[in-house]
Amino acid sequence: MPDVDMSQYEHLAKFDTTLVENMSILSAMDNYYQWISSVLRRYAGKRVLDIGCANGNLTQFFLDKEKIMGVDYSKDYLKQIKKRFKGRKKFASAFFDATDEKQARKLKKNRFDTIVTMNTFEHIKDDVKAMRNAYTILDKGGRFIMFVPAGMWLYSILDYEGGHYRRYTKQELANKLR
Image 1 (cartoon, helix red, strand yellow):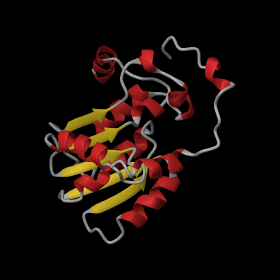
Image 2: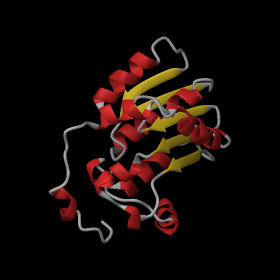
Image 3: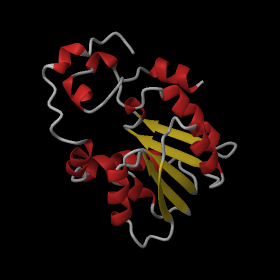
Image 4: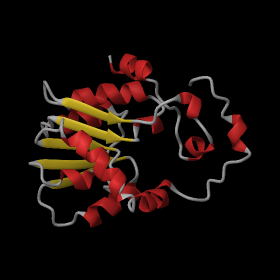
């Protein structure tokens, strides 16, 4: 963990709202998701895996692909995304612990040429293990496209309450991805 004293936030934190509720609020941020997806789509192939799909705020922009699968650790999110995209033949979803190597090997059979993830890896304690698993899942030559919060110096009560272990620097992320 970087040099942030998490205890400074413990007395302030109010864990009275869930991330699921927060994601529902974020769903209304259409312009934000359209902008991010327009950047990510430039690099996406035909078979896309969305790690940390939540309720599908990013996933929705990949529904035209040959295959789009949303995976998440939260069963509540999975219920929401299954309901949201019910009947979409190119869409699938599944429970996924990004640090579980066995689950990663099972996903490999889907032959994903692209993995997208947005604001997810900062929630994973062992993010390096999760990154390794992402590369296990990808077909050879595939792309792993990450969008993460930057600047640990910006870490605040919002990060803490949101379950973030970190924010990234460009160099730290590059080193971890290596």
